[in-house]
Length: 403
Image (tube, rainbow, N blue to C red; front, side):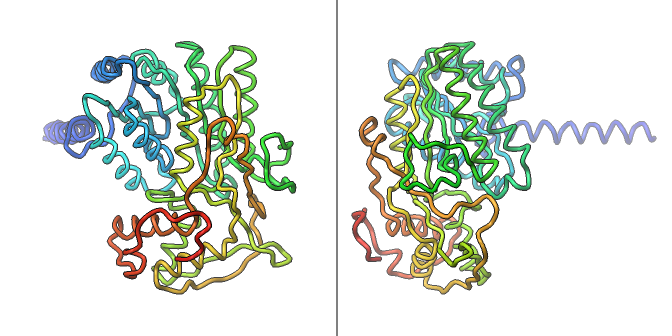
C-alpha cells in the first residue's frame, strides 16, 4: 500500500512537472524559451537557424538583459528598425519578476517570421548558451545590457555584482572571441564609474580612480577588461556610461518609481541631502534617448570606445518629487536624511563626444519624461490620474518648464 502511494505521488509530481514545462515552452502564457543545455534543446537551435535565415542581410543582434528595463526598450526599437533580435535574460528576482514577464510578453507579441524577435531564458554566465546563440544565430552585433544593477543593493549583496557584472562579462567576451572575434560589442557601463569626481560636467577623459560603490567599481572593471580584450584579441568594444535612466516599464528600485508608489500609498519618502543641506542632483535621462545612443553606438562599431549618454541637465531630486506630486495630484510625505553610503552628490554628463561620433542628442525633458512615466504607471497599475496629466500629449521641448 505504501509502495502504491509512493508511485501515485511520483506520477502526480511528474504530471505537474510536464505541465510546468509545457507552459514554459509551448503554453499560451509562455514569454521565453527556457534554456537548460546546448545538447537538450534542438528546438532552440532550429529557432536560431530560422531567425538567421530570415535576416537576409539585416543585422542579427544578440541582446542580453532583454527583459530588463533598458533592454526591453532597446529590443522594441531594434525590432521596429527591422533588425533580428535574439534576447537573453535570466529573470532574476532583484525586483518583481512579474514586471519582467510583462515586458517579455510584449516582446513575444512583437515577433514576426519576417522580423524575428526571440527571447531565451538563460544565464549570460553560461558559456554554452552564448556560443549556441552566436554560432547558430549568425549574430552580427552584440549589445550587452545584462547586469546586477543598483548602488545601494551592492552594500547588501556584493558577490552578486562580482558574478553578474564581471564573471558574466568575461564569459561573454570569451564566447565572442571563440565564435567570431569580429562581432562588435556594445556594453552598458555607468555614470557610477565617476564616483566622487568633483569636476563637472563629467567627461570620458576624466580620471576615474575613486568609485563610491561596488557597483561603480564593477562597471569600471568592465571598461578595463574591455581594453584588455581589445589589446589581446582585437575585439571591438564600446562602453556606454548611462546617467540615471528613467521611463515607462522602469525599475521599481529607482527613485522616481519608488517615490510614485510611496506617494500613492501615503507612505513616507526619504530625500537624501549632504551634511550641509545641499540637495542631490541627477542627470535624469529618458529611456528613448538612451536607446537612440545604444543603437547609434552599435552602428558605429568602433574598435574601442567609451561614451557618456546623459541628458546634460542635472535636476534636484526635490524637483523630481515636485513633478511627481503635480502629476499624481497628491502631496508627498517627505523626510530628510544624510546622503547614504555609495551615493554621490551630483551626476552631470558632458555628451559632446557622443554628439560628435554618434549624433547623440537628448530630446526629452524631465517634465515630459515623468508625464510619460505616470501615464504608463496609471495604465499598468490601473491607477487614475488627474485629468491635466492624462490629457497632455506630445513631445515638449527641453526648455519648456511648464507642466
